[in-house]
Amino acid sequence: MSQRAPDRPVVRHLTPDQVAGFWSTDIHPWSYDFDYLGHLTAAIYPKAFEQGRIRYLAQRWGTRQPAYVVASHTMQYATEIREEVAPLRVLIRPTALGRSSVRLEEMLVDRNSRVCNFSNVTLVAWDPQARGPRELSPAERGPLELDMEILHGLDLPSAAPRKNHTEADREAVMDTHARPRQEPELP
Image 1 (cartoon, rainbow, N blue to C red):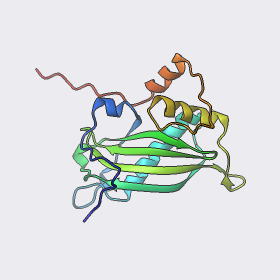
Image 2: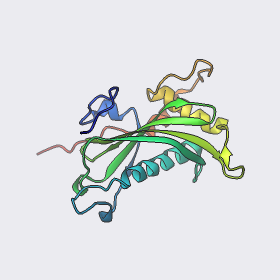
Image 3: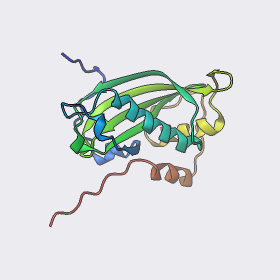
Image 4: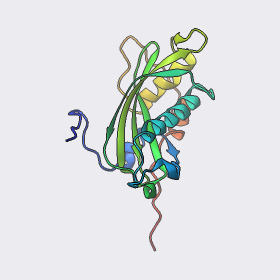
């Protein structure tokens, strides 16, 4: 018998308002990512989240290869994913920021806005030469702070001063985040 985390509300479908609070990207699974039962194999879920994370941080940090490692990752399966509900959408928003780490809340959603998996991950900035953790640079920290402020993430620790972001900063962030999909009008 599966148990749901007590603090996680049961969410079946996301409303446009809920989707707008996250950055998003589409993931296109391959036919061989589905098993003989017709659903996405368990190994593909973390891979989909990782693809989304790389895209998110590459965009936010202005690099093709963001340097981080996964310190912890938990997932909660909500429902199966069948091939006919692809492409999938990964939704991401930062919820906590440390000296060298960021915690992200993520969801894997099918094309019908049905939540299929919840994820929480803690990433640590990585120094490839020293082979160890490093402090987040101002260029990395700034976009994450802005996302937390604009995208309804948790408040930053009181020790971290709020930035005075311009309206252009806010618009640039919102332009890269999930927008409600336009449903086609029926005749």
